[in-house]
Length: 213
Image (tube, rainbow, N blue to C red; front, side):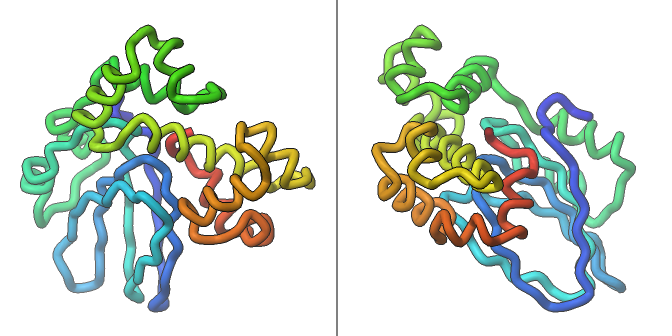
C-alpha cells in the first residue's frame, strides 16, 4: 500500500439509504460504480462534524483512505483517473504522484493524537512554539492544532463507550473537565450524546475503522 494511505474499504447497497458519516480526520479517494454508468471518482471532504449522506441504490464504492494531514492535488489526481477503472497497484501509483505528507505535519498530528493534555503540552513535546505549530497545521491541513487535538480526544473517548465504564470516569480519563464537558464535545463532533453512541452499534463500528486516532 502507498505510504500516504491508511486503509482501503468497500461498500455496497441495494437500497436507497442514508449513512451518518463520523469525522475521522481523513479524506478518501472514492470510486463509485453504478450499472450502465462510467466510474465516478471523487475525494471526500474533511468533515468538521457528523453528516448524513444519501446513498443511491445499486452503489458500489471502493475507498482509499489518506492518512491525516496528507496534501492531495485533487484536480490532477481525479483527472488522471477519470472514466476508468484500475488495478489497485496502478491506483497506488497515481496516489503517489499526487499526494504528499510533510514529516513535520505527521509528527505534530501524531503528538496531538497521543494522550497529551493540551495543545501547549503537545507543542512542548514536539519542541516548537504554539504559534509555529498553529502556522504549520493551518498551512498544511487548513485546520488548527485545537481541531486535531479535540477530534482525537473525542474519538478516543467515544471508542471507550464499548466498555461498561461510567461516563464521568471516561470524561476524566480523556481529559475533559467533567461529564457535561464531554457531552458538549460529543454533540459538536458527532451530533449525538454519549448515551446514544453507547447504544448504537453502527456508530461504534464506524469509530473503530482506521482514522485519526
